[in-house]
Length: 370
Ligand code: PMP
Image (cartoon, rainbow, N blue to C red; front, side, top):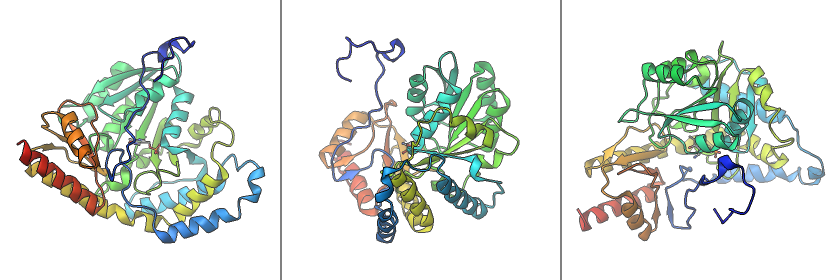
């Protein structure tokens, strides 16, 4: 951040660092968990014609309640649940959407966090969870994961009971570790507090075999909310569309904190079009899973410790200096993520060529300095 010492910044924000993944223009970008594949031409064409009829009407505000988009999300989720053999009753009033799941999470924490309230998370996890929390003036409290970054129901239940938080963040598959949690862990968190339990499922579509979604626990749990995004499996990070699923009463509260008309007409139209093409957009998920598994196997054979991943990235450890590895890869035009965990780094599954480029570069670096 710039020099803001002379400004009357809120005292609880002084010294905090903004979200800071380096944004560098290099040929192989494997650092922010995006989908490596561009939007297929057939979807690009549909998007183009879908927005076409909407330009003249931009003098009007968009649908504040994004009703068409809610319907599209319900249809998509019904398909997901049917394929996974999950029975979940969903209706449009159980759906929220915003500009990325970051904004969805921020709406939830604005509504249920805020000054004097406590938010608990299990670290290492997604770095925005604490930033969103402190942004609302709530207090962040973190509990550590076990050494292999897994979480079990009894530990989570005990930690939640002890902290008695207003909000609990769970993330599955977890960023940056790639590890999933069982439904029993979510139930344990829910049963041991009277606060909101947020399950961040940003990478859910990359689980094979599919892990049961926290959506299956919504019935009878009015304090549970599941957050998802179109940024990862759907390859729509640039579109900015995240969504949440929860009881209608919880969703209704979010309308108190969102800014009016937060989803632009163009965003709504493009998101609906993308959802109509869900099958095409999700076709690359299997390719990314193959790339992820190839990375895991290769890195493991090369002597790194690798954590089982249900996402589109791999966390690997046993690195002498993550920063040095990051720099040497960058020198070869490849960007990975030094996530600030000692001796660990994270890399995205890329296209086949990008994945090969990364693995070849790692081999070269190891050969030069074994
Ligand atoms: N949750 C998790 C766990 C993430 O890793 C990310 C993005 N890195 C997000 C939420 C936010 O994604 P978006 O705002 O693009 O939906």
